[in-house]
Amino acid sequence: MATVTIGNHSKIVAPFAEQYRIRSFYRDVLGCTLTKETTKVDYVKFQDGFFMAVLYQDDVASPEELRLSVWLELRTNELAALRNKITAFGVHSIEIPGAEHLYFQAPGGQVFRVVGEGDDLSRFER
Image (cartoon, rainbow, N blue to C red; front, side, top):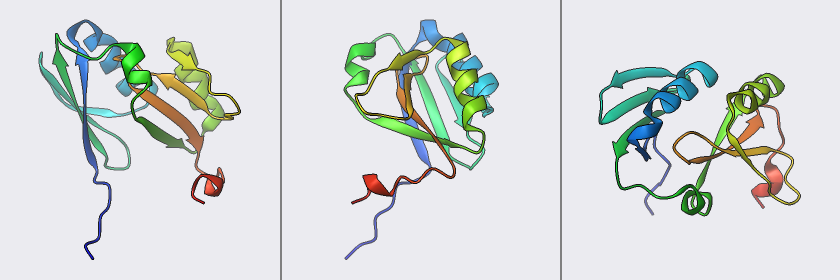
């Protein structure tokens, strides 16, 4: 049987109007590096070597539609500090009944969950 893993490249689609806030969020809040910045696409490099392309378009999913789609997990060794930076930036927090982690919509509408490096997440794996 073939071995399948999740790779280290992804893309999101976001409206042109959010470009400044998206760049600021990934660079200033999450500490990512923008390896390419153009009017139509940005390349974002996370500290662990994960890359995300941000494609700017006019026709994008609404924030409501994005809340129903996939979320990505952000893992940090400074959970409280990162949570504070994210909420101070002014993102839209998402309430999930019974959830202990911060779920939020980043500029552009994509949903993330923030966890600590030492968090025991094994209950989600059984």
